[in-house]
Amino acid sequence: MPQFLEHSMTAWKGQRIEHKPSLVDSFDPRARILMAVIFALLVVFSKNLLLPFIGLIIAFVFACLASLHLKRTFRRVIAMDLFVAMMIIMLPFTVTGDELFNVFGLSASKEGFMLAIAIALKANAVVLTMLALVGTMEASTLGHALGRLKVPEKLVHLLLFTVRYLDVISREYRRMRKAMRARAFVPKTNVHTLRSIGYLVGMLLVRSLERSERIYDAMKCRGYCGKLYLFDTMAWQQRDTGLIILAVLFAIFSIASGAYTV
Amino acid sequence: MTELIRTEQLSYSYPVRGVVLDSVDMSLHAGERVSLEGSNGAGKTTFLNLLVGLNKPKSGRVFAFGKERKIEADFIEVRSKAGFLFQDPDDQLFCPTVLEDVAFGPLNQGKSFDEAKAISIGVLDCLGMAGFENRVTHQLSGGEKRMVTLASVLAMKPDVLLLDEPSNALDKQARLRLIEVLSTLPQAMIIISHEPSFLDALVTRRTRLQGGKILDV
Ligand SMILES: Nc1ncnc2c1ncn2[C@@H]1O[C@H](COP(=O)(O)OP(=O)(O)OP(=O)(O)O)[C@@H](O)[C@H]1O
Ligand SMILES: [Mg+2]
Image 1: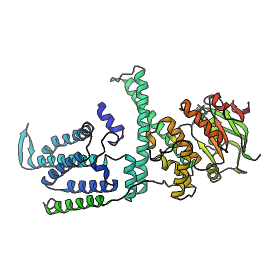
Image 2: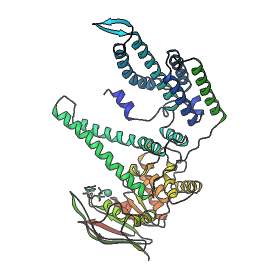
Image 3: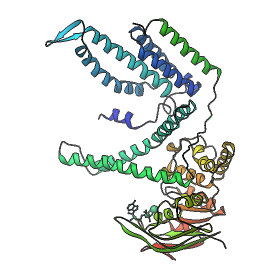
Image 4: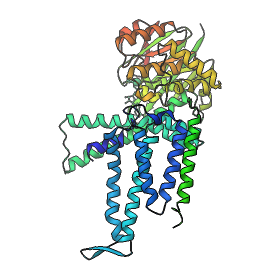
């Protein structure tokens, strides 16, 4: 895996540390999550191309308002677009319809082509919005906000533990990788490489399992009986209500534009 | 002097390693600070685990706070009276923020949110960690993590402290502050450490785990 992708998959430092304080930060996390979810649903379910296109423009506005770190954002969007690119190449040939052009006897359909464009627009609009509105909060804040929005407790705990230990485990991974490199390990296509990588992954699993047992022990030592308690300082303000009203207006506009009836 | 913890003929073995503890007799009285020394892998951590019921002894008995403790239900009370500081702070800090982590114990003991918050802030203050309440736990440095774990143990107001290498990963200054804090605490303690200077400054009695036995030094 290329280094820059590896980084964005194992480390959730969030944009929080890097991005400058912006307008988006002044909104309540709950309002931001609600806005992002409503927006995503509206864009994803639209059946024409106009709404996803408007959605993408709005997403850009969000990204600007959140003053996202340009390079990091670009990296993440690219990481997703690699998958989308696959689809754009495949879809015209797999969906049947009016022929648009012809490659080696395979006909590309107009319907497939439109579908591919719609998916690309929707995916980018949603990801950009998520990065701008949700990605700019600390991951633990996200957990708290979801808890306050009455998302099932078990899911919130799962998220919070993942956030807490993703970093510990990725540090463990990097330590072991470094130890391998320090002893002159260079990945090649041979049995030794495969076996070593196998050890690395296996050790990571075993260590994570043992750590989870120790954490459970630590929780028992402090009287754990099935409940985690969350402290936070969220306060719903007028501007948050404003944001929700905006979301509702956008919903009315989307429905009125006939995006779901075609 | 009231006896807080006592073990009788306590034995433990791991599948591959074999016997780690062999008929250990040990006791801790109020006001004592006892060291538990011994080489790596001698079984010190295992011994503390047995005291709070995280591992079950193969044979022998554990008495704590005036009663024999046998089953899981017995140990729930022991754990709330004996604060256990783990060897690796990362195992112990599982809440997203410092305040939540420190308040976790008191809340489990049935305190209200406000009480728990007040206790936590008080304890953090006491350890020189005021202002850390809203920090995210996984972004703390090793030494800060250590202090926060100590706070989360102390917040439960235990009668006994079981400290597994508390001076690990601390710099000279933090170590001095830790010694200062621990020496003013009234609780009886068992302290595992590999640092003679740290133990010299604190303990009232020294013991050593060797060959599966705990001996006075
Ligand atoms: N889960 C386990 N399964 C098998 N053997 C174990 C397990 N945990 C510990 N051991 C073994 O039991 C012995 C005692 O371990 P323990 O962790 O109690 O040592 P310790 O005295 O705390 O050492 P250290 O000073 O390095 O912390 C070690 O030899 C260790 O390899
Ligand atoms: Mg140990």
